[in-house]
Image (tube, rainbow, N blue to C red):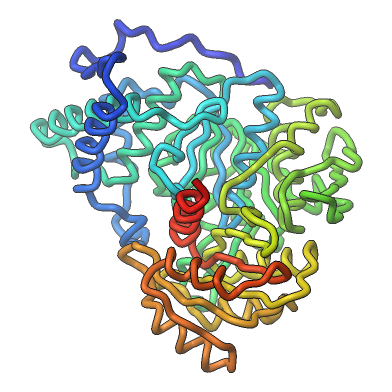
Length: 468
């Protein structure tokens, strides 16, 4: 069934102490207010920066926080997305279909590539500085109230940002929220949304120790976003993992390869041409404006999920929207001669997809230079194995560390690269690594910046500034 539009939140129903930000303030004043709000926000525990596990996690602080905001997440239906890789692309593809359907769509994604505002968008536009400062300032008052009332532990950084997004979506009267899980699923702060469809893209070895049974453990956590009454859409996975999802008793379960299938997945100029069979239709030669065979799989998931949401087959005119999707830092071509690609692949499966895309869809006559910065919890050898197994060339690795607490030192990465007989250099930061790679390149070369979304974000900012 198509989600019903909701009416805008009545201003009179909003908390009386919501601190309004004057519309006539200068851009500098808005920036100052946001900086103050960000300083308060950044004083909270950030699980993205510490890579905490699930021990002791609970949704109670998130529920308390949202109750103080009037439970905005109840105002609109949601598509909830988890999985090791592909969440951002699937979210963008579903949002494109929903927008073409005529819905006002809010998208919540993490982490951001360049600015925190990117995490929450409505109709493709990120939240403005003034609106974000206003909502964060209000959350500061709410936290003070909860602390005074001794209601549970203080919320985390991610819980506060998630609450801000859900409140903004309600204020913006969205018809649908497309919400990415931050990590795993069952105890993720996003697992409070009113989901009508829940998607699990895939299960990969990320944030795990690889001990026997890790796939089942990861699936058990990700399947926590499945709820009775909601449709579960699962990407390619073993039957025993799908059985774990079934234990959550979703209203209906659609599994890739059983209930829907990607029948054709071919390279095309600027993306892919895919043919997808679903329970309701067969969609031939759909153009998807994203590079890589994995994006064909993501498109199949998005089509199956959106078809389940609206409970009917999709018109060809609607599917044209998939040819206008752009996802920053997902094998994003930012320059030619030399070819420069920025890809936020942050685990071996993601890096394998990036390397395979380069080999499959581009002809590089010169050398291939990889600019790599990754997190300390990643295994450099596993990441390098992924590149070698793909058949993609790797002539030089520029090793760097993004400005993030969990970053792997560049020297450690370089040592792992050299142990394989591959040339490596180190740089003081991402910007220096990008500049050095470009200085060494000719028009026939390729430079691939990857290893982490944090690395990708710093590279995008640096190249944007350099091109102004």
